[in-house]
Length: 334
Image 1 (tube, rainbow, N blue to C red):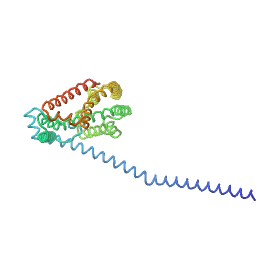
Image 2: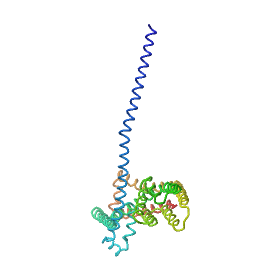
Image 3: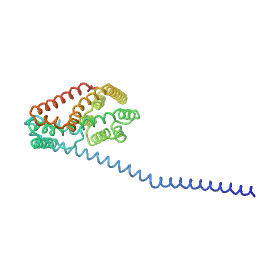
Image 4: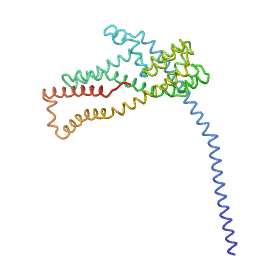
């Protein structure tokens, strides 16, 4: 009897394990069916929509570039600035804006600078006196220019990080027998913005009638990158004198990688100096704020007494000069 009950228990355990196995197999089949019939089509549609959005964005970029170029030719603001001060040349300012991915006409940018300066002068006249009136106005007016330069440097840094991979992809595609325009289209598809977008624009420009040399020169004007100039110069020289372009691009890619490694070493070696400069610049400000919170009566003569205002202005000016000097000391061009 005990033996029979033991066999029944083993049979029940086997059936239970078999049932769990069936549930597991059914769950796997269900997940596979859901993945094949729902998830994969959804992911494919998402990728297609993303690709279509990227192409639409690139077309909008090209349209904005052309529109800004045409409108800037007849801008009265740019013409007036060029006649009065010599600043505001269409070609130079427009190139700076495009290099920063700011797609507005130069005249509009000049108006934004003037408007910000006027707002700064108004705020300075409303709340401050003396030299601070002009300091606030100049700072507010220079803010769009600082943003322009910051966006330009950021785009250039991102572009140069993608250059080695792009050069290797171009070289491999040329070794495989593709033409240069075809390799540029491949790079535009495989590499993200900003390099992929610029390659796409260059490819479309040569398709619309420009020569490859002209399209590459225009790309060199849209991006403020020394590494890109190496690539453009190499292609232009190869078109005129001949040579193995794939090998040239491989050498350029190796050169860019070495430059990036050297930049990394320079950043490491100058990290102590940059950190020291940050501490030296932040320490007076933190000390001032601490004294303002703990002993406001002790610090208020800097704002109420005329000599205190002069001392405060001299301190800010000396800090600005010191920051500029320390920046020049730790900034090493590679």
